Length: 471
Image (cartoon, rainbow, N blue to C red; front, top):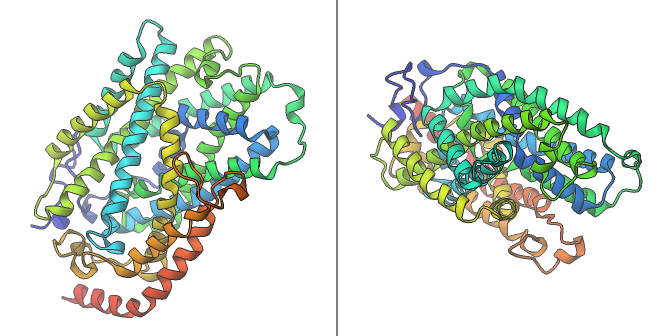
């Protein structure tokens, strides 16, 4: 039996049996609205609040212009996230396994490695934040011990798997939504009158806020179908797209703007979590408690998806391996040990370091997601041969897809002159005040190269797919 044919032998088991394999139609379940609750609740968390406060201070913009940039950036990034999320019900596969149909079995390996780095980075950063939040809530708990508690709880949920993650986000949405709304109102009451002055717009400051918000939701794109792949194929593409977009754009925008409000209010401090704790007496404590629970729930996504990507990496070189429940448990323990060690040793600067890494990796994510969306919606129109994803020779997609790999490389290279991040600055970056505009240059270049090189292969690939399906 190939991994593509692997079924969920015990659909009622508490711990999910499936790993990186195909989810057969007989095992599909769930509601499209779960995608809204997942992406909305996931974003009502400390890390986007910290990010929103940081860009508000750095941009030197009035609150009006900061908010307009945040909403615009999160909406555009949400569209990218949603376009990938909508692929899950059609494919029944994790996002990174699906990339084999676009880049080839080995060609997809680079983005799988980057995806695992993002997942593990998110997990480590949120573990550190969870320790701080627990310490703020209960001062007797050392941040290091708090991080361990938060990480262990998240890993436990991640091991339970897909259904548990969605259930917790469905329930948590109401508590987190109500709490952030009340806290928002409380923080707005303390704003000085000058904040409401629209004032002049600093173009570079606005673009900084916009691009950071864009990065935020785009950074999720490489694993969104992990959380939609169990939905029935009959839900189509439009409904999952709209539900994912609404949840991600609204959730991220609310928390980003909340961070900006905290930065401008009388609660402002060098640590936004301290500002949260200072809100309205008991309200701050309640919000911190909910944030702790949300960090744990959010981190369950990170460990769950991180494990899927690590399994995908190993399975790339061992096509006969059919990982099941125990593989996920063992890999989860490995992730827990490694990330918790990093979170406790580098607790003071892990969050800022990870944000810098995410920004730097955008130069790789943008060309990948451009190829992903074009291949799925334009070239193959959602029709893939599932068995080929799990064949050692790559099946009809081969080990490397030359047009996709060259287009990806072109999209990365074209950004280098204007790249600006904590690790590298291109020769033209100074012309844009150090703001990285590569994410706007890469898509058209990547698309042009990909579609030009792919055009002569489209008819041939469709013939191969048709022949495979008939046989």
